[in-house]
Image 1 (cartoon, chains in turn purple, yellow, red, blue):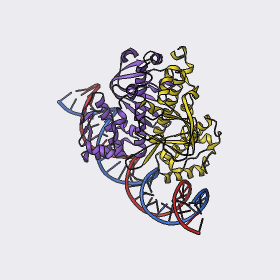
Image 2 (image 1 turned 135 degrees about the vertical axis):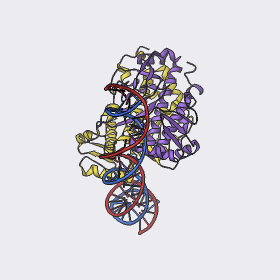
Image 3 (image 1 turned 45 degrees about the horizontal axis):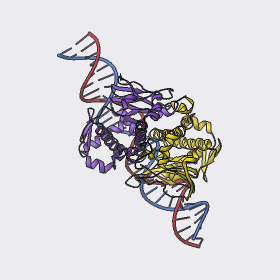
Length: 227
Length: 227
DNA sequence: CGCGCTCTTGACTAGGGTCAAGTGCAGTGG
DNA sequence: CCACTGCACTTGACCCTAGTCAAGAGCGCG
């Protein structure tokens, strides 16, 4: 079903912008391969990463509703995306409401992730914030079939990760060392390895519920089903 | 149009929970009078405020898509809300697509606000973060007809505001003093007064675009219009 | 009058930012 | 094959910001 929405697959190399902040008339994208990050820039050039997108995630779904996108995307690795035209999405709402709901569900999930990051940055210290974020990414990777319970490939540089966590790259480095020396997790050579997942979960209060609810709208007898 | 969606207006007093985190089968609400805040709790009892809701805002729109709500709401003042049943929302998507799009638009705007808070907490220092937040609230108040360019009634306690900003109430107090002594703004006795809005905007890089886009879907000839 | 809020201020401390130097490694070119 | 360059990562030293602890002021309310 999803296939009908998409344009052809396009390859992009590492370091490319996908949707410029403030750009109008853009589309949404579905990410098939590789990693992307969404971020905003401040006037002084400092950057805040909003979220990391991994294969299976949508890019810019929300901004379809707006005339302009309010943040930008960069590819963190070589990627493969397919474009979804705004027009197509609106048509989908009429012709395939269930599919449209799946899109809404995806958008909701994205927002739940952003909210979780907000809580992390606002109220968790850098140590558990880092651990929480890497646990979250691990859970997301596992949901789309990459990685295992004990680790996953993670092509993030420390400075990108630091921007996501709201700390400096230097301090992130120190935090990663602490995590390593506490035998909790190792992040090295593009790979995250969990050494003591139970303790990490306990320490951070990580609860993956917000990442994989059963899609409620399909299971709770909504008006759409009969439509 | 919106009236058809709503149940009867209900009054609630200050300090009441509206949607419990983790609660199932809840509805969304429209806030008519008073202020509400959405927040999440950590295990240790610390709190992160996600956003403040003012009259005209929806509560829990997003969580309609999910089986459970991922955060809670408390009333900050006496309020008046009306309930919007989940079922009714789905029906609206078929019967009044334009109205449904307005709901999506509201949800998108809410997310844009959350993203802006994320950027603030992650990369702005407490001083400009506080200023930015109070500017944003002022712009939102003005959009719904409360307050003026020079100030607005703001019934937030310092501890609630501090939770929203990701700093301690004590430090917020110091920041507010700095803002006062710099002749930028005064927050006292439930009222925010801007003394030098130009300088505040310059200092924080505040750009209200994300609060009041022209609703794009209604103006850009979407498939919905013809439907 | 006294209790319990929220707000205010000061003194102290530690966590995390900044600056600076250095390591390791992949890619390039002689 | 080995210098050279550039980038990401490490580590140390220093300092400042914001958290913590503690005490007190102002005020509404029973």
